[in-house]
Image 1 (cartoon, rainbow, N blue to C red):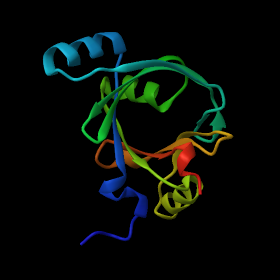
Image 2 (cartoon, rainbow, N blue to C red; image 1 turned 180 degrees about the vertical axis):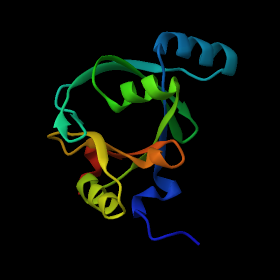
Image 3 (cartoon, rainbow, N blue to C red; image 1 turned 135 degrees about the vertical axis):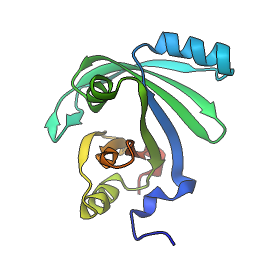
Length: 155
């Protein structure tokens, strides 16, 4: 029987699996040639207003996205800045970093997570109502969970 956890972690809200990598270009090439995954959309990202453990800590990086059925595979490469991705890479090397869930109300879900003893370790909120928050769920099971609010989902 399921617990009384955060309602947003319903499997139907699963939208993303993310892997931290040293090189997006090398990983995309490998995943495409060996596994046939793709096409990938590669983007440079710049988050000057991101937070890292509650403090402003902007960063730049590269992201690659490919659809795996209803779920998006996200590859993450850090270019500059201090992030949970950098921490992960230094501590564990490349690998599964987080599992992302779509939410309708990011702030509300962050509050629900906090009540369950989870902290937001990195995140961003944009003017259009979108944003994301990584939770410190990796202390058990090894993977962070990410709350993702898209602009069209704003309540």
